Image (cartoon, rainbow over all chains, first blue to last red; front, side, top):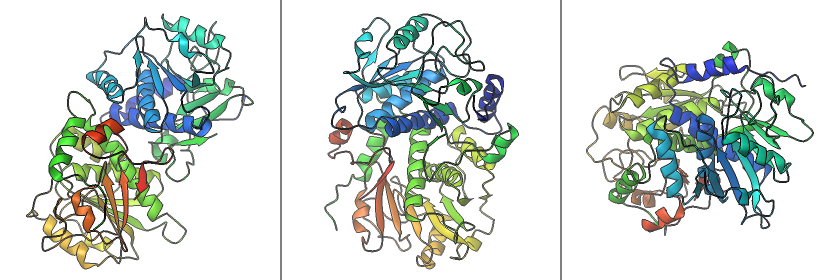
Length: 242
Length: 242
């Protein structure tokens, strides 16, 4: 347990709402673009492409909500960085037209998108895959996990980090405030907290898990309102190692 | 005149329309966020903050269209990078609600936004200002320049690059295809071409002007359709020096 400042699931939801509310005026499209980009940048820092892995895949598992949307954006930026992402998106969001557009963008980049019935397990092999992006559930997750996600998390946990797993904001299966309390959950090799770490991130094993913060889009006065200071990102970096 | 590949104003408009059309599915909000970010990154590379200039301003002059929108996004990222941007936005766009939201975001970051009648000339002094961002007109510009922009461009050109001027995509007053043919125009110290250089960029004096490309958001097959190859951006960089 570290001394890291964390923001509860309740306050994180409030902060998010305020950012996209009438006073601040951010749109989901803007924030998701920056969040997804920041996760892709963290992946590049921890799992760079080299001659040995350049033909391998990155498996992006996208959940049904905004965490999944961050994953879809991340996949596109990874492709631009030279990776070969494959997206597993079993329950497509129909929340807004924008989710359909994110999928179209992936098609445009010739990024394969697997349906629920497709064979995604073939990518759970270290000789196939550089890393797995867990963009299944984020700060609004409440247990129990709906299927097929319980089964998916179970399959990923069974490979026991023989392929590194990158969790977007909250490792799936973890309670946002309490950490890994459920039966099945992801143990990330890399956690990218968005805007500010959530309480569950105090439960990562810092000897085994790298922890970054990303989503560089708030001014300090706004952070202070929620009890923290903005992170000291270097130069134009969109992530910072904690 | 260099051997640089360039895309005509007509084809640039077509490419842009296609990117945001029903097949590709990008939204203006996404592309503008990435474009504005890339310009801010180029500014940081050429005019980094140091102890001597950290209290100076960056004057962002935003035009009435999408080039102006790129400038508004750029200003916000510059603030996040530690700069003190001041935005001069004499003719606010009422095209879509999103432009109003971009202005709100600047308010949220406490970035001053000058109206047409405000004293923007006070920032045309080297002891006050690190650089000027010319986000007035882009690839859809057709002469003659409407006022107040003719007068603004004239004032900026008169300071004769005693403050470096950063042109977003097309230096204002330049014909997109022909270059500096009008009576009054910007001579940039830094040109950031978006997606691909426009023909006018062949007329920059490469001894005096740095040239970058930014807006890293298309796959190679799409570039090839328009006759070029995507640029070899390094790592997660959003700009590349040409």
